[in-house]
Length: 112
Length: 115
Image (cartoon, rainbow over all chains, first blue to last red; front, side, top):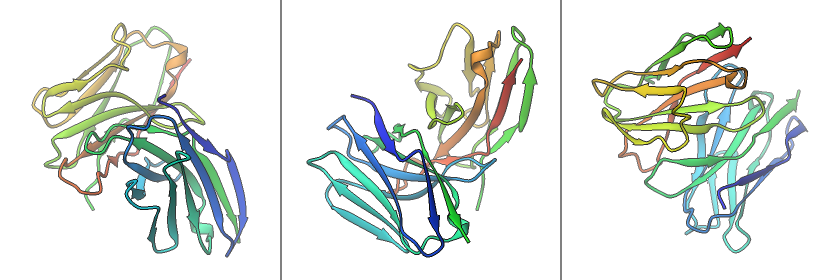
């Protein structure tokens, strides 16, 4: 019940396209779902996060869609840019604990 | 923006040797975490400190791993003896505990290779 399944493992998108990364969780007690972005040689950095009281959250070109009944959430990157090329991790946990189960990551490459 | 400092950046050691990693969190952050990230996987929490106290070390292999944060500021993670399977990125993170975004601030990590 502690797994977070993430797909795809890798993704190649043309500049200007939409990148979509999907995650599914099992533990219904989880109520906080962040996405982290990691560049090579760097630690992960918080990109955007959502709580299950809303079905969608948008920050700039990044949008999280959340489906509580399906226990799934996804990251959409609109107008993808070469600078977005990085590894993206979804995570899930209980709000306030700061302890998350991370997905296995998606390596995104945006072609110029 | 302030950063979490970690050293060394890279560490190569032989099996059965002892290794140690150091972390200095962002000033004022009471909570400190050590994560292990195996190549191709997401970070996995090893230990969490609140000030100088361990609040969660359930995933720490205590027969060979130890962690301390004596003065509630910087922290050291030690492995003795190192095994081949310990090869990974060791990430330190800190949090303020009062941030509504529940943001973890990660350092750049120590890449450990055990030969």
